[in-house]
Length: 123
Image (cartoon, rainbow, N blue to C red; front, side, top):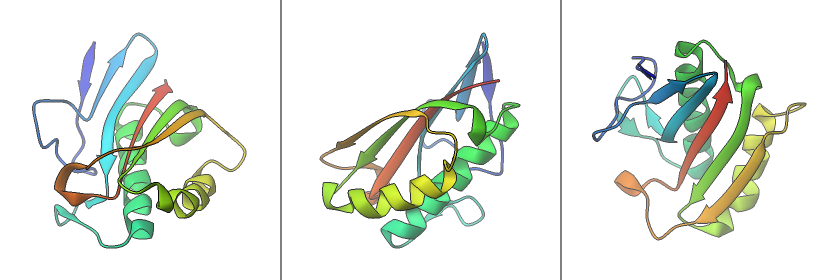
């Protein structure tokens, strides 16, 4: 196994890696809408989703992969009423390639985030 770290995505805020490569799989830890340059959570659900996807893309690139090689995603929402907005933005990143996905509402997310997304990809 290999730990992945890139400065192009937010640092892990706990005892975990941004991603782990095991065999041909890349397991990316959940990302919230933190701007990697400032280290701060961005405002609005729309901006958070875009930053989450940007952060995931950066971690995948550092792993030798890309968003096009994602096989499974899990979306965690603080408010299920954001589902439609999140789905529209998420869909813009997965136009032709549609990974398997789960979406759930949770009681709360770190730093008061409204969305967190984790992915599993292949090299």
